Image 1 (cartoon, rainbow, N blue to C red):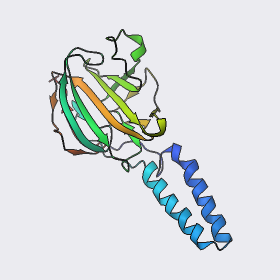
Image 2 (cartoon, rainbow, N blue to C red):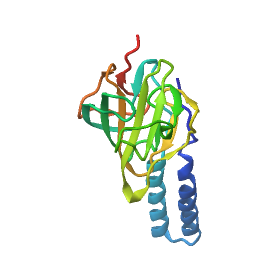
Image 3 (tube, helix red, strand yellow):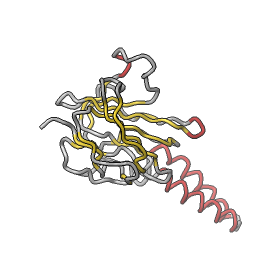
Image 4 (tube, rainbow, N blue to C red):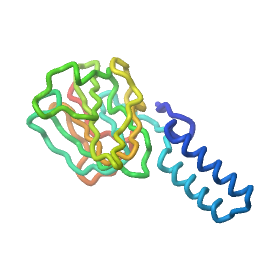
Length: 207
């Protein structure tokens, strides 16, 4: 299955690319070759940062796909998860030049974390709670924002998303976490490289 995408780059990056292209055109008209080369280099860098490539989502109904491009840095079991009791926690260091768009780990409905009573001190400032049709709760969290630019959701509460669907712009986020029920099986280990929407991090417990 092919994931949806914007043409070439995420929508947030289009104004920056247009500005770089415009400055390059002005430099060309003025025969300012050095500035034209600089504008071209900036355009290429911006394209790499904001790229939103098409990804082929694996056919894995119970699979939890990676939401980001990066490297797994931690796999552990928490005694108190975000919205459930014990939970597996998978931490991914995001590749700065990976895809700009985060993808939904599982198929399900987006729920609002404000609608439930969470354990004291556990409320995440940037998180996506997805509940599958089987009732499994999967939480995607982000932390470590460069320049204070937190991810921006492109979905709404109550919306239903497919596995691997685009769900947020990462901006300059450093770290993603995926929390799944302990009945599930984690399939990755610290040090593994993963690609958004392609690689399976874990499998949920339902047969």
